[in-house]
Structure formats: C-alpha cells, structure tokens
Length: 181
Image (cartoon, rainbow, N blue to C red; front, side):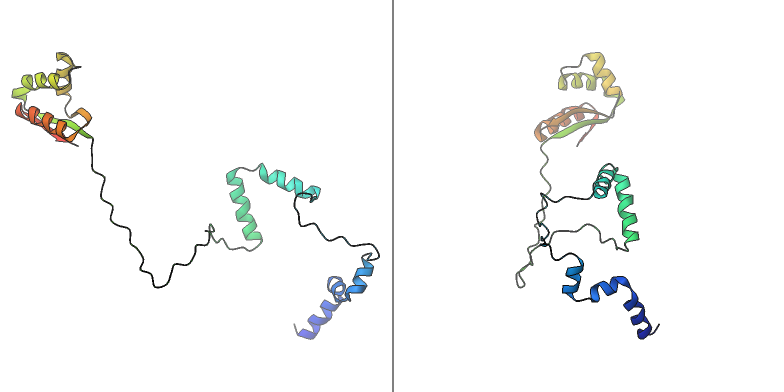
C-alpha cells in the first residue's frame, strides 16, 4: 500500500480526526467550560469501575496452577516474552579490585561417631556376646546374643572418637570386625 492511500485512510478515521483537531477545539467539545479536575495521584481514594473489582475478585480466587495458566495465556495474547524472574539490581563491582575467591572450607571435624559390628568369628561368639553385654549394660544375655546374631548392627551411636576406638579395640580382641563411622 502506498503512503498516500494510507494517509487518506487514516484521515477518515474518527480516532485520528479527534487528535488532529487543535487542543482548544477538543477542550470545548469535552465541556471545557467546566473546571477540569486533574486526576488524583493517590491510590487511597481512587474509585475503580465495577468490572475491575470483579476481575480482581476472580483472579484472587484462582489456584496457583490457574494463575500460572493465566499468566502464560496473557503472555501469548499480549505477545510478551517470558523473561524469567527479575533479580534486583546490584551495585557495580569496583573495576580494578581483585575479586576475592571464597576460601576452601574445610569439612567440619566429626565429633560424634557410630560403632558398628560388621561381622564376627563364630568360634568366639560367646566371648563376643559377653563383651557386648559389658559395652551395652542395658542388654541382658539373651538380647546380647540376638544382637550379635543380627550383625551388621550399630553397637553405639553418637560417641566420641576415643570411646569408639576403645570399643573397637575391646571387641576386635574377641573376634569381631568393627567399623567406625
């Protein structure tokens, strides 16, 4: 379409004609003989049309999934590209300053250990049961026997390294394989 034809079409458009009139003529058409009140910039006493209230009420009653669908549909309808979440602007880093690299953090030293019975020598089973009963005084002989037979099992948890080493030493003397975790 050439520009002259486009110009004629636009000049016949009532919307365009309304803006092509001088301001004074438009003001008189709008009733400029009355005092014009500028719009309020405060949102406190602003009145909204009824249909806006209805839209707000309907949107506020949507579930999170429905809001996501609404957002997606509005982006398609209005041809808006999804830019992802907006991050707040950060100040620019000084130019000639070296960037400090975080120091390698050492793994926190472990203070609580678990002593685990992995396996045992069947020939020394009775001696091991007696030692387990000594290490865990709450157990009676039958419970200690069942405990040993259920290996692998945790003997004690949340003990210090020294106590774990001591338990390991005592139980390995009677044919147990112990792991400290």
